[in-house]
Length: 580
Image (tube, rainbow, N blue to C red; front, top):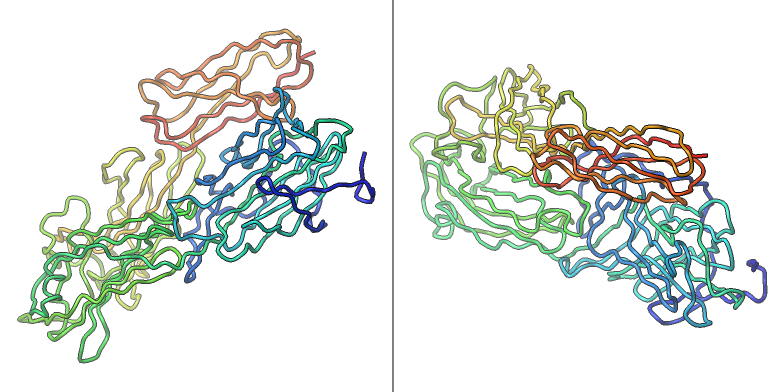
């Protein structure tokens, strides 16, 4: 067995067919791992999307609270007969990795020649984000231990070797480390690879953990986007009046569409600035609740606002410059000067812009009608909630959302009632499910009944007869499917038969849902049956062993996104069966 001090050591780092020899680094630290990969950073659930700095934005991958794996990941193999497969267990608390096998032998990498072989995991920025580059990456890196010959793990980007190459250990625990790399300027790719040097003693490198050759988890990519967003269309009475420097009165609607092909549109701001000085009237359209920060496009690439009413009666008579600005997820800003208008109303009072239309809105100019809703009721109110995204396990219990209702200059609006609405995932219908009332300091707690994955809105009307909401705050709730599994018996012979039965909880569509049944065998979870439940969520499968001896863990997975099943991925507890 070769060691680092062996003068016969021939290390190779293969980059898409070319050879180089980067310096060896010992910056990794060894940590023991067992079963599925553990996650190492604090949970992101119950946190708002991060504030972006100009030109850069984060993308979270395979992290606590952010399980998604975006486009661009792939696996590769050079000078080998091995078959690499992209293996994604992020949703189950695992990692994204390279699963390898040669001649159906898991964890085996057989050379195709006598110059060493290479397998690896690659990331390439997709064409859907044409101007995005990767500034840096942090991740927990996992490399399987080797049961024979020598294997080295290395990292490259834009054709350059990155620090951190290391020899993988022989037998025992996987090799793990938390690493951070700064990539070459303008880089759009990253690779982590394993080189096998068999020294002609054997044609095959064998790995104990076939899905970590290599693997990554807790990934944060800092992406660079210096291309500003675009205003693709502006229309409505206010836009027309501003272009013509016209005089306006009453309610003036404006519509616009903003786009950004790279990081996506995060917010828009409409500003009316008095030309004779004074405080401007400002309304910000925040789309942050729709920004997931788990994809190359952190926010939606297009946002459209239709018929937003600007109440010019809330302005002091006079001339105003009208400007629309768009901000993307990376903090790049585009300002569009629309022109100017002159407000001329019989009577005016100081105030801000109008309110976005809510469900069931009628005439969008009908604002400020009826009794005031709360002390210091205002059309310029803002609703604040403690989170924009929530991830929860399935449970038959309600949810309490804490928030605050504020007026201009952040003055609290007390004793005000707001509507609580929900839109269940997979539907397009908002329905009223409750109300919330503010305290004197503007704080409130909204009680939300238990439910599936959904969009929850808290919406405030400034006056009782308003046809539109003055302020709306949104929370995206992701609920993991509830899955129960039982196995009988828990002990049997090497060719014994067991029955796996269980139930998927929650509303189940008439056609049922598909469940994956898995057994932990030879170091990894293997799916062996995919039954469909009945309309009540029940399933039952008979399984016979074929000579296996030992302890075998079983579990059941129900995947989200199935038709009529408004839940995210969920899994059962592990049930052990012993054969002897």
